[in-house]
Length: 175
Image (cartoon, rainbow, N blue to C red):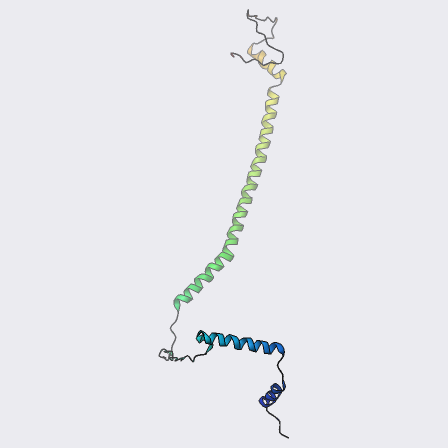
């Protein structure tokens, strides 16, 4: 018994098939459309596949040369070394400089705080001296040395012009 080929088996299977009513209607519509197009000579050339001649030219290849020794690329090496140096400079030296500047600022702040404390102590010492020199007893003693004495009688000078001033108002001389 011989085994049928696949194409023979498919032809036999398709031969046993009966088209459905929908398939029959679709085939009739397609045939009517084709007749209409042919009748009015409007059959598109796109329906008929054309053979396009494709002539490909072989790409022109450059002539090959045998290289026995590579030329050194010093510019590339120098650029790479400079880039690495710059990167190391930014990564190592910049933080050191920033840390140094921060330490210097902290030192200056410390010196200014110490100076502020010294000035505050000096200010309090001077205000204590002012207080000691401006006591009433001290002023009376200094006045006595200069020949001043307390007043024996007090007299007031009265002017002829009286101004009306409400209570609580402030008067400024000459206005």
